Image (cartoon, rainbow, N blue to C red; front, side, top):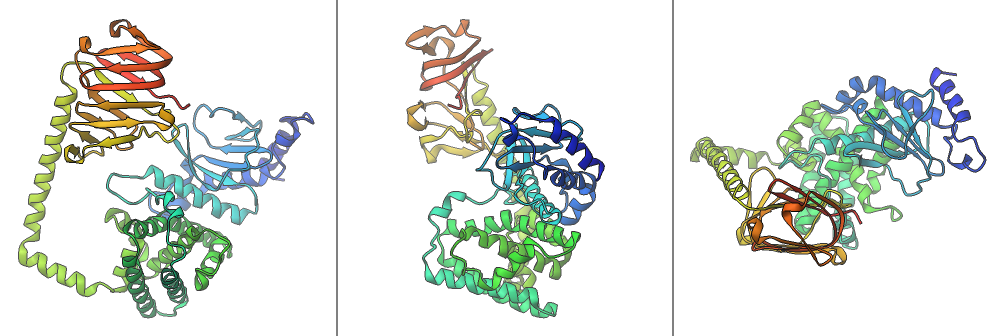
Length: 483
């Protein structure tokens, strides 16, 4: 028995020993999970970059859910999240004794930190290592999001309910794509791979033109999200030896649309994983950096690798040379930099004007999304750093009427619609009431759980059923609660 197993065996005898709590004590299989976590902790700095440039699974906390017992957390830095307590004798491990039947294999955020969450339904080492590296890659993707880049953003999951699942022509096209990818994976020569991948690109692009734009984008983003994570898992499984879940996934490409008992979203695990492996063969590992830096999709890069757009690329290059593209690009870079500076100056001037600066803050909301009921697109400007300036008018509202308001002053909105900032008038023009009773701004410091909050001013009318209020200098902060 290893030292990890002995330590955890002792832990299992000590934690939650009573009969009433036995159902939520760490199971014996936790020892197997701990060995996987230790392997990733010890070798992640070496393994991670071999799977994807910059990927360091050893820096990502790992959370394993035993549905009827509780959740084990490994390698969390600093004070543990609520509900977790250290496991005696198990280095870097903590336990939360609560059943969780709804937990999925996914990347989540805990206390603002990306975490890989896995169901511990299987504890076979090879399978669990692959699954852990798959889900940890999702955490890495989320932490790698950059403005204007596709990588890490994921697909719009709401579109699963409106995807054209009963479009026979689309289904046939997707089935054909699966067969072409399967044939390319089996091909004996690089020339044959290019030929089949070129055919795939022709079929894929023709099918995508028939789809609504948002659905074609959904497919691209699902492949970048789940497909790349599946690619990482397949490479990891090959690294550790043997064929497991990832290889089984690829074998289903020959009948990509045949399974009616699974969500169609799983198709993109297969196609994305296959495209990654084919790009490895044709382009070497350098394609992974290009994908991110050039903001490409897997399908776009596959079309390039196959030579499908060779004539188009040559024509573009000729047009650029003839029309002085390099000079146009240089001029555009200068103009864009000037525009960014000008927009930032406008924002600083507007928010720096004298008066009360109100900040409506939705950080505690489940989706961190305040929500709008209306805005004026003619008077909405991108600032250049992900924020949006509504120069004239913005209406906000919450579910169930928990808050509603109307800004009639310039408002700065952050990229996630979590905070709004605006100068709404002089202190004498801003009137605040709580439960119908006036509150003098000069007397306000902090007020938690204020009910029936109303703000009226030349620049804002706002009604909130419950909020935390805070006054700091000229800033009046209104924090919307989770419930």
